[in-house]
Length: 207
Image (tube, rainbow, N blue to C red; front, side):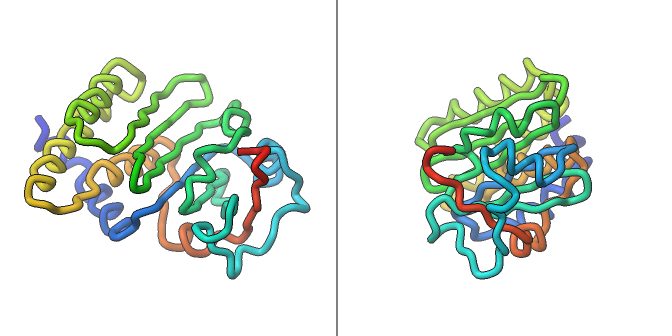
């Protein structure tokens, strides 16, 4: 069963594993359908706060979030987890399909909410606790993302095997991004990561 699931999604998962290789800090959100002006207002800021993204470093600049329009979706990217802690996150997702994947040295987060209110999320601190991944799969089986539970299970087993060899496999992160693409129709690529047109400096009061 797991081999069938793996074959069905293998190319997409492999694509994301290559895209995120060597990335230790990562926070990506996608919200659809939504226009960028409305997204900025939902975050709690104004369109006039949008800056050119050129030259901005989201890891070095506190509260810096890159944002842009991709078709009918608004996507954000940063390396310090700003997108994860937006106070306007719930408003950003209102009436839309909304997904987030975030990780750093301490956390790994996946969340997805459908515009009808369905979806699922998982948030854990990275620790020596093998039950955390299994808990995630069990939660997926109980919710509306159940069709992806076997996919997560398959790559969870692969990640555990590679961990024993001292590698950093990034399977789960790639699977999370795969699910967001399949659910929202938006493919994350190097252009989105490196060339989003706008930057926002989100003040502490909004995160």
